[in-house]
Each structure stands twice: as structure tokens, then as C-alpha cells.
Length: 392
Image 1 (spheres, one colour):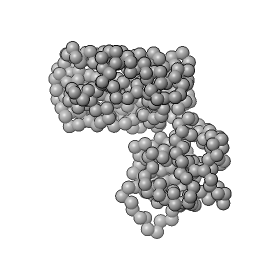
Image 2: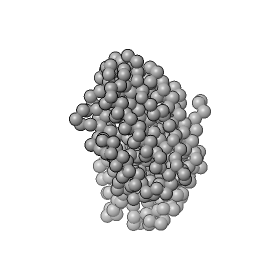
Image 3: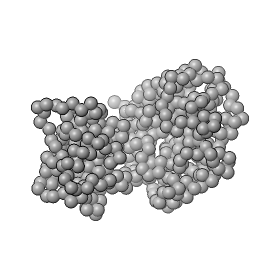
Image 4: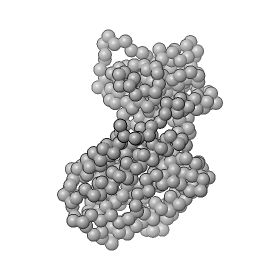
């Protein structure tokens, strides 16, 4: 096995205790943390279980050990990975093709409520990850709760996980190292004539070779027209001489994500391409320079908008300059003009400078992962900010 860091068992237990303390303060009898294959963070944060095909949840009461709730087919998988001892199979968490599993002995929401609370009535119930919940799970949960309101409780978890521990930071540093080495490999091997999908394949193969468990998100490679897509997937489109291509790579280690985004020009960059790239680098550097404990998040966003607008690219902006990073590449909180929080030590962010033009259908993203400190920030990825030109 490669020497890759991981989150120790005791830290999973500490996370549950922190949520239980918040539940007592807020008056929640139960909280269900919910996740799926694409967005597993609320489940994996407490259990290390990452659902596949099915969905999953962790049910937590104010006292005692939590339950891992899974679909009917994943017990052997879940029991191999779960940091939670008791695992319950519920039909509500089945895959979307909705098999019936006739004759299977399954738990229900009512039976798992009873396991944690006995006959105690539920007065307040929260879900962390509520925006992810399928209608099937929601309806089954609503029926079991009777008239008890299902409340969004994402903030209960977000307020805990947004400040990273040293074990989490070790995983994030390892993910950042793999991501940087993967980016180096892609730059050494990318060529005119390759498709975006082939370039993504270079990245995926290398990051796994280096020890990543998976990518942080679908690797993005967008070249020429269409590179103004802020969220996308690689196409079966060939790279041509003169193209500016933006490449977005992120590796994941023990659940923790990383990300690096840089533009690459095939051949000599034009004056317009050079100017856009320079603006992106200047904007990112200015944001990173502002990040330190005690700074109002909204002020960072306001300064970023003014800076980019003053450089003549205000109409290329789409969103605020940073989003949280950890168990997801994009997790709460966001740094934007409406943000009402102060930056704190060990908050981690992607400094994500996206600039895109509907007029030219081109764009780029400069992205690195940083950790906020008392007098500045630690740049975990810290990839070079230079003009990357590939000889053709």
C-alpha cells in the first residue's frame, strides 16, 4: 500500500459528539445526514461510507452511537468501510430503478427511530443534506414522522466541518501533492490533436497511479470555443494549434478533495490570450493576499469584483472568488458579497477565479486550495502562475 494519510477512527467519533452537542443546544431529537454517490459528504464525514448506486444516511440522536442507513444491496460493501458499527438496510435508500426486494427483511424509518429513542416522541427532526434528498426518501421519512416537520439542518454539520483538523489537513495536503504531480504529467504529455476526453484520461490514470482514491470531480478539459463553460465535462473535441485550453484537475484522498485549474495555450499565445491569463493570475493573487483570520468574507468578494472590473473584465465574472473545500471540492461556505461570516483559522477554500465571455465563448479558471491562518494562508496546491505554452 502507498503511504497515504487517512482520518483515524477516533475522529469520526469526535464528529458525532460535536453534532450531539449542537443538537442539544438547538433542541433536535434526531438528525439524519444524507448523501448520494455524487454528493456523499454528509454521510462520509461521519461513517467513511461512500454510497454507490444507492443513497445513504447517518441517523444521530442526542446520546449514544449513530446508525448507518443504507439500501438493501450494499451491506457487505458498507460493513467493509463503515466506521459506524450498526448498519441498517432500508428500502427507502434503494437505487433509482426501484427494485422491490420481495421477501427481504428490511428496517424502516420507524424501526430505526425506535432503536435510538425507544418510545420517546420526536419533537424536532433535522436533515443535513436536505437539498440532495430524493422524493422517495422524503416521502417515506415524512410518513414515518407523522406531523413532525422535516427541517434543513445542513448548518449543524457545516459549522463543524468548515474548520479542519490536522488529520483532515494531512489528507488535503496529500491530495494537493497528487493533483500537482498529475498536472505536471498532463502538461508533459498533452499534444495538439488529442481530444478533451483523452486528456482527462491522462489525468485520471496518473492520479490513481500516485495514490488517489478517485477524482474530486469530473476532470474538466475545455478547449477553444466553449471554454466559457463554468461547469462542464470534457468533449470528444480535438485540441487545435492556437487554442487556449483550460484544464481542471482534482484528486481525492480518504474523502478529501483538491483542485488545480490553469489555462494552457497551444503554440504562442496571442496578445488577447496573454492579457486574459494575466488578469486571472493577478485576480487570484490579490484574493489570496486578503485571506487571513478575522477578515470579513464579504469584503474579500467586494474587493475581487472591484479589482477585476478595474482591469476591464467585470462582465466576465460569474460568482464569488472562493468556495469551501474539504470532503467536497465545492462545499460551504462561499466567499461572496452576501457572506456574513469572518474568516477563521483552518477554514479551507478553493480560490476559484473563473472568467468567461458569452461573446467570445472562451474563458479560463485559475484555482488553488488554501488554508486560512492567523496572518495569511497556506497555499496547499501552490501551482505555478505562469504562461503555459505547449510547442506545436
